[in-house]
Image 1 (cartoon, rainbow, N blue to C red):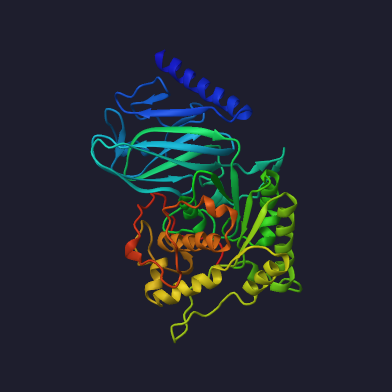
Image 2: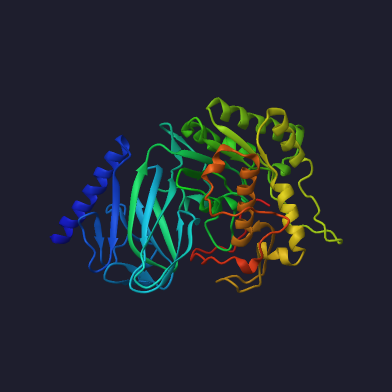
Length: 435
């Protein structure tokens, strides 16, 4: 009877939160972990509670196997998930880290968006960290829907909850979630080199990019593997972005890889590609938004003399021309990634891509050798290029780059040995759509 009463009260609290969120966007949900956690400011979690829509919170994806409840925190020897049922919107997430033992905590949100990277806490040390997460569904404006792919439906970005993944040797005291009603949003439109890749060992710059920004901006990444400008538009992704966009919001637009595959009259770089780029820019400006064009990441394709062979044809030049004619800020990632790969050389640059021998991952019988899609190291390097591009352009949003982020020179990129981040437990060895 007591358990039923507690579940009812918890569900009632979340329902009241939803109601307040719809009106004021100021209510908060707090979860306190540990055997001696106090309930005066939130819900006490002192045992494994599996997530359910009915309850509205809990440990997700069989996270119960390696959890240890300490006096005032929870620790784990392997990654675990905690989910909270929430409506679409932007949320401030505050996590209190630390406990009786030293720990190193990494936090991903939704489909492996890096929020906190390897935060160290000593014995008895406590640290409070905060980040912003965009929660969304595929529905908008009554009965309109985005055309989601099966991989997105089974992923964590487009459901009715906020999912946090704790990695490394995490030690968590509490999670506090507050809805944010007014915040600048940076929307992203793009393909597989941009999207939140939900499974290891794949990575894209869009999911590492939020880690470099302050809590004054939210990143809403609508990119999807295999899409071109035309399919992004026909799938209602642009429509939903424009439906949500407020004056002063940004739309970063990177396409090219899949647009190149369209054949037929008017389908080339100077035809449909140019026409759609102009449409994306014009419609963003009509909503008071700020468009930014980003040329496509280079593929890893070296010539015998150690230089990189361009594989995008006239598409980067077409985007550059649109940017010049319409006076749109442009980040030349094609140029920057060319410098990166050539600085590494043919062999070392493999470390930025998904190159792994057979049996590196479960059920992986064949070697992985992908010259288009990045691993986490390469994706993070491209994210740093985008951040530096924002600085070089002196965009207003440059003030939202964390002051601790150093300048980045793609001609002097980081080395693979300098990058460490725990791997997620979600693994898929099938190559993402697009090339």
